[in-house]
Image (cartoon, rainbow, N blue to C red; front, side, top):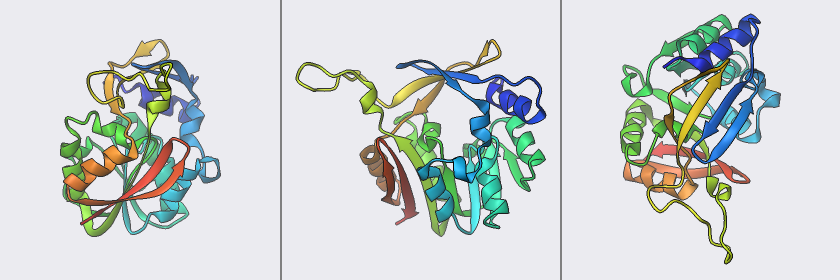
Amino acid sequence: MKDLMGRAIWDYFHKENPEDLQTETSISELDELPVDYLFRNFDEMNAIEQKALKLSQGKVLDIGAGAGSHSLYLQNERNLDVTALDISPKSIEVCKLRGIKNTVVQNMLEFSGETFDTILLLMNGTGIFQSLNVIDVYLKKLHSLLNKKGQILIDSTDILYMFDQDEDGGVLIPATGYYGELDYVVHYKGESEDPIKWLYLDFNTLQNAAINNGFKVEMILQDEDSYLAKLTKK
């Protein structure tokens, strides 16, 4: 991993000629991702993020923390005990420099030793699951990290709208695999990461997978094709 996302976050924080990130998927063209978007404050966040942050309580694990904006709000404004976790070393260095007290550079599957009252997976939190083939591995890990009465707050988007329709109004989706399983590529300053697997889940598919792994599932908020879900232990 070249850690291009982390480099962009680092460059922006240190004012070292940052450029916008570019992203693309197997079903979409190149798109700009302004780096300052990753540094927005609470008032600049969308309704799903704001709702998740308001519902957070107790000891919190922020998975895929990025530049740390969610963790920073919970630590400084809500006075919660937060751990920011990300696989990007440079992102976590910026989290530290922004004042986040507890940080970890690690894949969530390798993280252990603590349990939490709230686990956050935001900005298409289901993406980290990669594909339906391995979603059980991730859900079992999350189950092990969650306190008995804890909650997982996770968001995603049903991307069915991105596919073409036929003359009868039916949606033309791939015949093999789940339509939310995409290849995702990040570009920054002329360099490209290797494609990673990224998973967008409709709510019913997330619900079924979570129930099969010992969770109860509740839809907390829906905003057009995106939603926030809460998972708790059965």
